[in-house]
Length: 107
Image 1 (cartoon, one colour):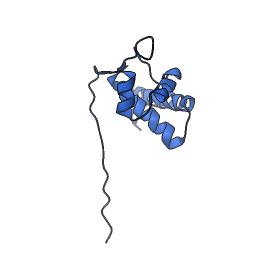
Image 2: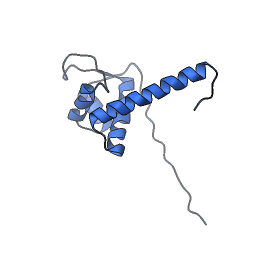
Image 3: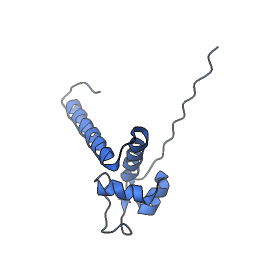
């Protein structure tokens, strides 16, 4: 008899209008602020505000930051590598959306 395979899916619903400070985002992502600053420097995250103490991140930034951190950890990428990977993923999503709007197959 085969043992049962159990998959656990974890999800967090975040209000799109919610804003995080740098410290709050680092706590929500389970990482240090320096890592997030590096992602901002590479253009992965785009906070509002002039200085890190004033930065505010939108709700969707939480998902993007977690994706970036997962890429960095799983693939051992630098912040620049994460930025490139996310840019390519964004391009793929955009092309899929265009194809779907034109009635093509979705992938």
